[in-house]
Figure 1 (cartoon, one colour):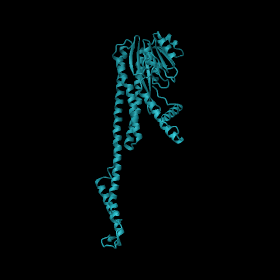
Figure 2 (cartoon, one colour; figure 1 turned 45 degrees about the horizontal axis):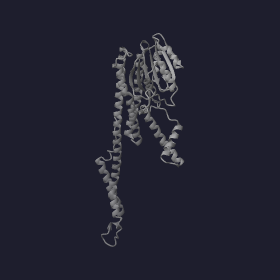
Figure 3 (cartoon, helix red, strand yellow; figure 1 turned 120 degrees about the horizontal axis):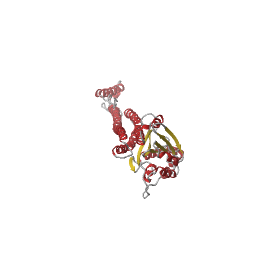
Figure 4 (tube, one colour; figure 1 turned 90 degrees about the vertical axis):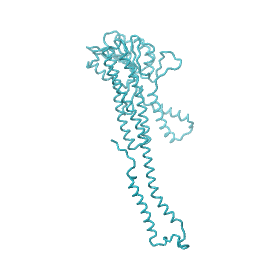
Length: 416
């Protein structure tokens, strides 16, 4: 599911609702601005987390095959690429019924549907391609868990595609549905903006590679392989972010650093949920005896399975690194606190004897009343001697702490 920035109007409305819920009927302009920024960040984080983690679920008691499409869904755009060994034709489809003439030919037809549109359009698409109501439900009611299901002459494959964001701070997560038949492949994408199939389209158009030499099952493999390979650039960004966090944790850990670590861990968990079930799906395509997947394509799917395994290994490795960063962060904060306590201890230890001396000579006994009442107060060098003694004590303590290594052992972590 793709992640889009919330419109400012929607954010303001949600901020007002949150403020009303908390019973803040009268808020000054300054308080409103400060609270609004904070609530805006909370709302964006909540929406982003919901996008990452929530699967679609039917309302209790709803009929099987019920279609639920969001009101702000992108309009449906249909692009058909029909090809064989000699030629490749790209056609923009305005009405679903225009696809009829391509379904029973010996060439391979790739029908790419971008945007969920509305229910009426999908009922027409279902009629053209003879889609089972449960297939329509899984395709339209997004997001679904990645899976593979066989329906008579069709094979349904649900996959999750990720694309890195422009600022390299997160990723777009989108469901891609495949309906594979003997001579055509139907793909459904939620949003037209984000796509990793450009290279596949280029290979079909130019005739390079092996796609035009094989059937629709090989096209399905090529698209699945593109989806799996799309995880690697995202994980590369996370590797760089983790390295930056390592430097930040060592050099200057703060509360913001902790929030960044939690954000990376949460997003890596979303990546894990996206890729883990796809390993099982591809394994089913390899091992299940489906007549729609040829033996040659199963061999290629093994390579795709290896790529999934590599992605899972990287995700698990990065999750362990972020867990280690949490330990390093806690240790760094603890060491920083120990440094503060050590510094305060040194200062206190130096000034304790000085404070004692000053306190003794601040008792104001009258030297004239008794020869034992601080006779040194009448000494010519009394004041200077007192300062000399205090400076000598302070320097002695500083030398003592230096010899013990207290000034050298302030925590510092050397990064290899």
